Amino acid sequence: MRILRFDRRWKRSGWRVVFLVLICIGTTFYLLFHLQQRAFAKRTHCVSNLVHIRMAKVLYQEEFKIPDGATIPVEVFERFFEQVMAKPLGQYKCLCGGKYEIGPAGIMPACSYTGICYTYQFDWRRVRLERRAWRHSLEP
Image (cartoon, rainbow, N blue to C red; front, side):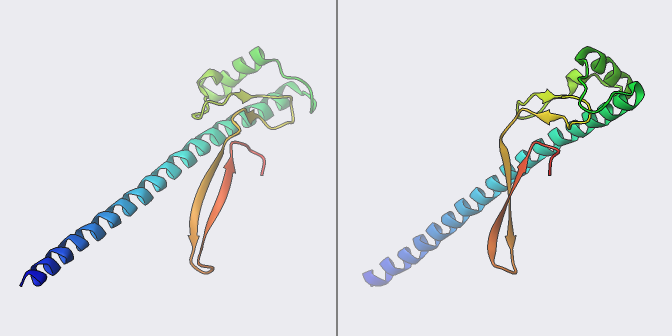
């Protein structure tokens, strides 16, 4: 009789342990997925800001007929940016702490943040986990 009772208790506690381990694994994957989404959202926001700055640079270059490679005065560009985009350039900030560099005419603006955002996706055809690196840049 004692052996049966011990066996039943062990089965119950064994299932509890399995259940707790599954909960821990599920929570870990959920948190990793959530962190991955946040990092990708920050990167997307930064690249969107860079696109706005690039559009304003192109308009500035066309309006003032500036050749490629010429320097753009920051104060003049900030006033022009506020007129064109209806929002001051100072409100455009990288959520990861980087600073935007306008650069000369004809060259893409850049973010000083050098970190990389990784996203993971499971490829069911090859049965493996693929990782993709995303940078805070307009360059491909």
